Figure 1: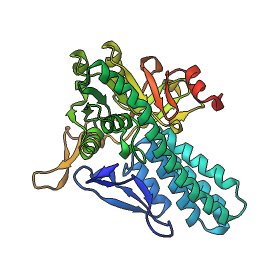
Figure 2: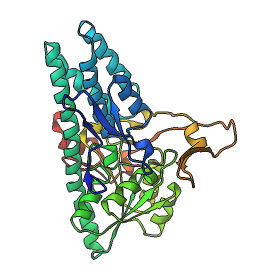
Figure 3: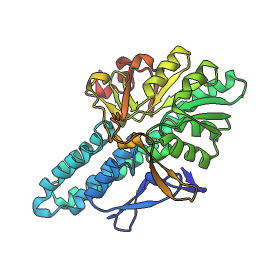
Length: 368
């Protein structure tokens, strides 16, 4: 997507021999646009764990390039042990995100088919690029399928703006390009369909306020920032036509793990008969589990993320300030699980399906 009219992806090989990978360090947005070099496995692990990058698809792509970095930096005599250690380190960084382990395992499987270390290094690069390219293309297709939902609502409203509620950031910054939840919005906007987006601020990291609002501004999409707890009120007053969110892991039966607070939006949508859709590339499915509440691990993060807040001061300096009493006890769950029964449908690169095992497998018969 675009920044000041220039197209960017969120991750890309930087130098002529592909030994440096660059990312947009999202911790500084929207106040500063900073590109960071990743050169070691530790660089990639820190970038994922400390949220220089975030979002299901981008975490997967970063892990894919992290495994390529492991391959080109591994000493020949200890190649296998180095790769195994790198894989374990990367997988441990964010336990909820399904794309992370998927990308690492895909790299391990690709390298295992090569007999020479040179071949393993070459295939690791090819696989990392494929993971990134597929992510971008799948998100583009999600946009095309989801655009039809927005077009149908627009027709019923006689061309009046379609009001769409989002939660967290499932935009292009959370993927390699286009995004998942925002892809239909961008596709509709580009097709001339009038849309307006209600942007949840998304505590504690404020990805909606900092990232989604910034993305939509750069693309010229009308939007309004709201506090996290405003969505239910808007739905009660018929000010939301459609909810589209992303997901960090989705079970084969349609349960969805997404940023904490998603479940509450789904409950409000159900009560007010507002369609609630989840957008995801197939790499976000966890085909091994069905019960998301029981089987999806929920990441717990530092309590400092909710007792302190980062922002731009009046003097234009980035500052961290405390917003709670000293030594306040905290618990900081990063995600919650929305049961399939609350979901109107899943928007994937293969089309729109019910959040139910039978229909999901109809679209992905190879997973039977």
